[in-house]
Structures are given as C-alpha cells and as structure tokens.
Length: 211
Image 1 (cartoon, rainbow, N blue to C red):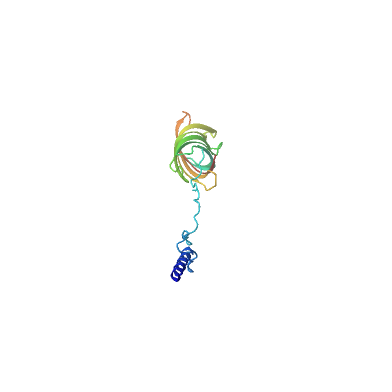
Image 2 (tube, rainbow, N blue to C red; image 1 turned 120 degrees about the vertical axis):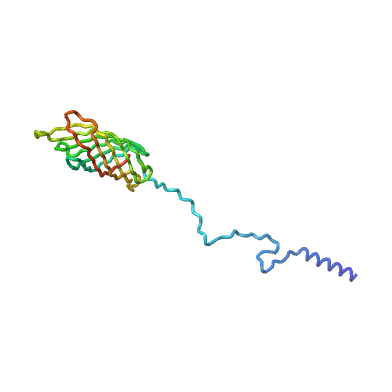
C-alpha cells in the first residue's frame, strides 16, 4: 500500500506540473513563445514628406493683338525732326503683321505723314526678348516749300524695312512690352511732277500692351 500511495502521489504532481501555465520570465513583458509585435523603424532625421508642388508657368504672356505708341525721330538728308509713332501688331507666334503711322511736323515745311504695313518674323517667340525683322510698304506724304515760297505736299509710295527689339515687361497677367524700332523707307512710286527725295530713317522708342 505505501508503494501504491507513492505512485499516485507522483502521478498527481506530474499532472499539476503539466496543467500549470508557464510563468512569465521577469525579463519579458509576455510569456516566452508569445508572438512579438515589432513597430516599423522611425527615422527622426528625415523630415515628413510633402505633397508635390504644382509647376509654375514662367513663360511670358502672349497676346494676339498689341497696340503701342511712342516718340519717333526722323533722320533724312534735308532735316532731322521728332514726331509721334503708333503701331498695331497682329500675331502671337513667330510671324505676324503690323500696321503703323508716323507723324513728323505735319503741315510744316519738311513735314512727314507715313502710313505703312509690313510682315514680320519674331526670332524670340516664347521668350522675353524679341528680335524682330519686318518688311513691307508705305504711303508717305511729304511737305516741301517750293522755289516760289509756297508750301506743297507730295505723295510717295515707299518700300519699308524694319528692325525691332522688344522686351516683355515683368507685369503680372499682362503682355506689356517696351520696344525700339529702326524703320528705313525708300521711295518707289512718285508723281512725275514730284521732286526726288532720298531715303529716310525713323527711330522709335515705344511702349505697348496686348489684348
């Protein structure tokens, strides 16, 4: 009987040991064998990511029609006088057309009124600086004083060649430009009674806006 009692005592202790859950190691927050959840590593040196910024359109504004005006200086063999020049440009790309008017001491001796049109090519399309070359025709009205002292006016047809340098001003949402023109005119058609006149050059400094 003592042997049987001892066997039953050992069996009971074994069952208790098997049924008792494993005690947590004091060095761990959870019992050994439990799944460990790891957080993704964080970098404290890298700044938080920012959404991409939209690209800014830095191309200068363009317009289909531009009006400009400014003072002009006529250089001719007979005289050098100042006046007024106005122009209308049509075209927003590399080619276009211009209509212009020039008035220099109109009604006086050596006065000039000239109305012209030309086709132009822009070598700086899409940029702020625009070198432009144009060629066309014009009708010029020249005043002269005759040998008898009377004032007369003569009409001429002329060929026109123009060189222009324009700069698009940094004005927000506006096609505003400042330009310099050198326009040379050579007479091509004249009346039989009209006196011969030499070529003349008109230098212009102007400011314009587009629409």
